[in-house]
Each structure stands twice: as C-alpha cells, then as structure tokens.
Image 1 (tube, rainbow, N blue to C red):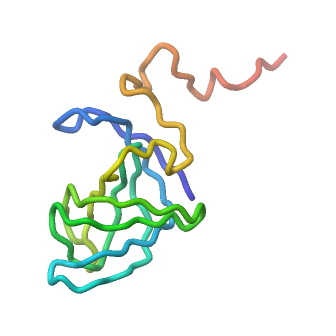
Image 2: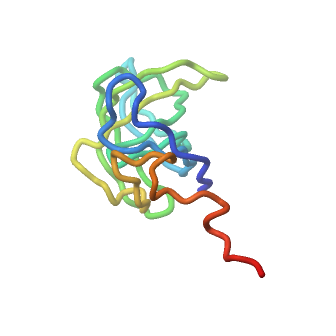
Length: 133
C-alpha cells in the first residue's frame, strides 16, 4: 500500500469524508453491464471512509451491486457503483460506496471533514524536525 496524498473535500459537492490517494490491492466481483459474473484483481486509486475509486476492466452499471475484497485483511464488503469515470488503457474509473458504513475497512485514520493543510494545527516538514543546536 503506497499512500500518495490527501485531496480536498471541496470538489463540487461536499464529500462526507476526506479522500486519500492510496493504492490498496482489492478483488472486485459481481455482474457486469451484460449480466455476466466477473471477478477482477484491482488496486484502489483513492479511498475514503465510505468506499473507493478503482480502475476496472469489467464494464459495470451505475447503481450496480459489487463485492470488494481487501486482499491484505481478507475482509469483504458489499458496495454499489456511484461513479463511472473516464477509461484509461482499457480500464474505467469506478467509484464504489459501501452499502453499510465501514469506517475501519481500510485500516486508515482519515482526517476530519474540516481538515486542511492550511489549518493552524497542521504540521509542515519544518515543524516536525527536532531543533538542531
């Protein structure tokens, strides 16, 4: 799992939780747009307390029910497709939302909704180093 960065909560509609750009190995299974069952290994592009953004080869439909299996923890959750994005190299960006709240699924502590790197309590690299004498 490689954490890349946080993104803003203000991208159009306000998000319910901070999105973290992080690659997590997952397996997605369910029915594609033609009703055929599929199972596909994937990595998340971004995660949040309510789901994830993944790249899928399978073509799925908005609102479709899928299952997401976390490869490291072996946990599985039912999700539904909430976003269909652009296709890159034959794989589409797909936003998945957990059917029931699962804030601990990713084993990540998400920043609070009002967090910003400009917040007075946010540390920067110079504040985290001990003072040198």
